[in-house]
Figure 1: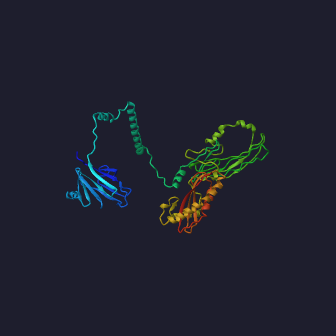
Figure 2 (figure 1 turned 135 degrees about the vertical axis):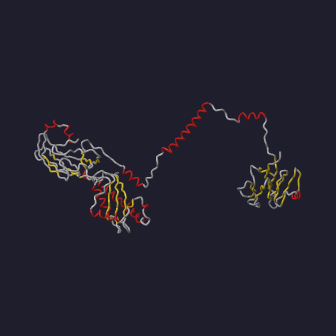
Figure 3 (figure 1 turned 120 degrees about the horizontal axis):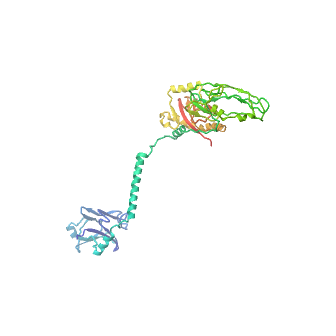
Length: 473
């Protein structure tokens, strides 16, 4: 077999340090020098930092000798001199051709030298017994029935998992909805919010509501005992809701219905006593006259649940209309009906305020929503940003008003306020819109008066809308 593998041996003071083989440690070139990152490092200060010692050109290898290096070669075991090398084109200048029928030594300095030689590739020849052992142990062992079953189940579950993930991703996965800003998300949640508190039996009465959703009641004066102890004062309640009233009222039977809770006071006394009382009910929806109270302890046995049911389920009492509403949607309110403000309806505006708002609309002044300043024209953004910063710093004033009213009556939710700011910075008008159904009119009016007293640093008319979330706790 031809000698085709080039070996380089690095010696230091006659001792072998390392052997480098072609194809394993180098392919086309080999560098030596004092650099610590080199494969062969020569620890001599006079040696170059990095030198390309070996290079391959075509199929032949060449050594690039440094000045002062000594070369000694042999051909088929016989030493040859420098003139032989030059005459046969083996040594040309500083390039030494490494022929596969020659070997040699290059002394870099007195302590370091590199030897080169070609060797035959070593191949181990196995005996017949070794080949039999290799053939026996070079194959995998046969799987048992349990191992084959486990492998099949693992592959099956893996395929099912991949299939499920693909089906979920392309078929079952819900589409992502971009809600936008946090303010938009809160507005969406508040729009879907509806809280109904169940009332005790007997404390709900259905009355017709107005087209605008206003509800107002004016109770008649309850008759006070007018005789000896033992009487009870009673009175009919006159109420107005812009539609069908309670007995004695008038209104539009086609108006949408609303439900309100009434509270009725009565006085009891000792058995056998008889008293008198009277009161007159006033209200745009109807009127009632107080009647003298009469209390007979022996009459309690004549009480009939049917009598109450006639009033509750539509049979009109004598001299009045039915209290039961026709079929249709019913908006339920609880608490003091005279102070309820429907959700989504602004606080009532004066004619002057309405004219101001109309002038802004006629001038095409665009409303800028809190949290969407980026959509405003670029020339308006500095003023809108100043307005937003000022409003954020004043929201605490609204919270203080809320806490005062919330201590008197439980209410929570959010309100939306739109400011109509004139070119001199004064708030000419404001709209206060409740987003929940439990804010009182007095609270909303005080908030409106507060925001209309604000002023801002602007140079032109602006409309700015923001939302304040109010919760107890």
